[in-house]
Length: 181
Image (cartoon, rainbow, N blue to C red):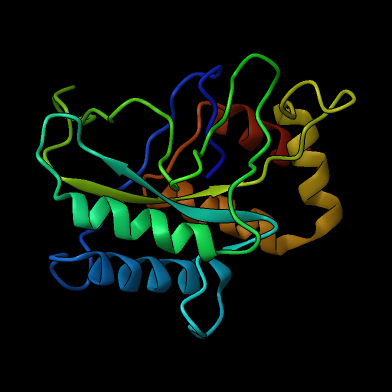
């Protein structure tokens, strides 16, 4: 998912971890599984990042999170190469801090607009394809054109996300552009 504090919000699905997270080791294990799914590869050596993105952590500001979990996550992130450094449009600041914490507001439920009622959230932040001399995000038209050139896999991935309720603010415009082929 591409995150931006300067664009309209999207919609994601929250999926529970495979096991209960009681320690930083548990959290790192879950992050490794998430990364393997994102990379569409067998899990190997607990990777949590590549040059195209990274697993990040968001913690509920209304909950008491054990320091051991947050410190352990920060220590794991410090060993990850490459990690973070996700491009943001001018004026947006850093998206993922040096401790691997995603710098966005805590999400609200689409059902009732109340804060999501969990303690921790792992998310994969992906590197956007900036346009205009790296000064802005791609438009729906530009995204559709890039996907057409790159092949059906990107379009299939996009359509599967939409069908599963994972949405960006540009989905309708991207879909309209893809249909104009």
